[in-house]
Length: 94
Image (cartoon, rainbow, N blue to C red):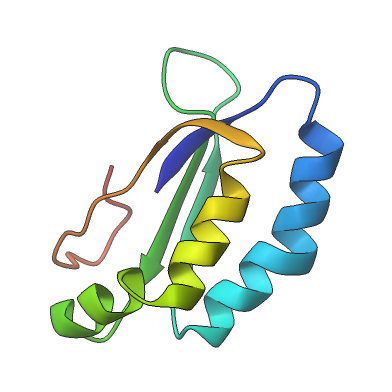
């Protein structure tokens, strides 16, 4: 997943991510693999990689009401949100 934080919403964003987003991501069975912050260059500000046991599980999670609600709340704090599902190759995959 990638995104940029809304300018001026950094504090609210970090509170949301720490208190709500990441705990719920864990509850949904997504294993956080990598998290990156871009500090220079023309790339998304935040890049996050999560791992699921199978493609079928990933499809079930991203179509669940819990994920859709959590994702919707994240949109209050970010721009240029994007995600993709890719087979795991053992390293961060951008």
